[in-house]
Amino acid sequence: MLEKGILETRRNFYALLYRMYLEPPSREFVDDLMNERFYLPGLISDEELAEGFKLVREFVEKSKDKAIDELHKDLVGEYTRLFIGPHRLPVQPYESWWVDGKLMGESLLKVKQVYRKAGIAKVKEYAEPEDHIAFELRFMHYLCEAELSADTEERIAECLNMQKEYLNEHLLRWVPDFCDALTENELSEFYKGIARLTKGFILLEEAVIEELLES
Image 1 (cartoon, rainbow, N blue to C red):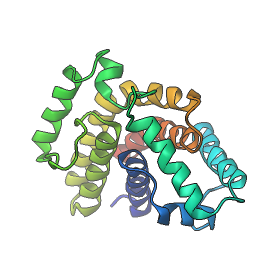
Image 2 (image 1 turned 45 degrees about the horizontal axis):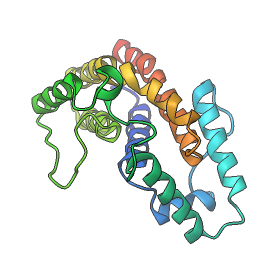
Image 3 (image 1 turned 135 degrees about the vertical axis):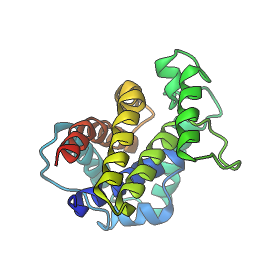
C-alpha cells in the first residue's frame, strides 16, 4: 500500500487551504498561529512553498505586539475586503472569471458535472458558486479522504486518477494566476503567504500524484 503519511499530509494541507478561503480565520487559529502551535517549517525544498511559509512567519513576527483579539479582528477585516466585499472583489476567487472571462461561465457548469458524478452537492447554506476556490480545494480534500479510506490498490489508483484529472482540468488552469494576483494585491498581508502556499502546493501536486500513481 502507498505511504499513508504522504496521503495524510496531502489531505491535511487541503483542509488548511480550503478553510482559509471558505471563511475568516477563527480566533482559535489566530491564537495557535501567534503562540507557535501552527507548524511553520524553516527549510523546505519547493521555492513557492518556502516563500509562503516565510511570508506567514514574517506576518507573525510583525504582529507579536498585538493582542489576539485585535489581530483576529484585523484578519477578519482582511478576509472580508478580499473575499466578501461589499465592493467589487479585488481578486475574483472563481474559476469562471479566470478561464471564461466572466462569472457563472462554462467552467461552473463543468465543475458541477464533476461534483454530480462524484455524488457531491453544495449545501444550501453555502452561498458561493461551486467554482469558488474554497469549494474546488474542498473537493480535492474529499478525494484525498476517499483515497485514505480505500482498502484496495485499485481503489487508491481510481482516487488518484480522479485527483489528477480534476487538478489538470480545473485547479491548474487558474489557481496559480489567482494566487499571483492575490500576492500582489495591496489589501493582502496575511493572505500573501496563504496565496504562495496555495500556488506552491497545487503546482507540486502534479508531480506528487504522478509519483504516487507510479509507485
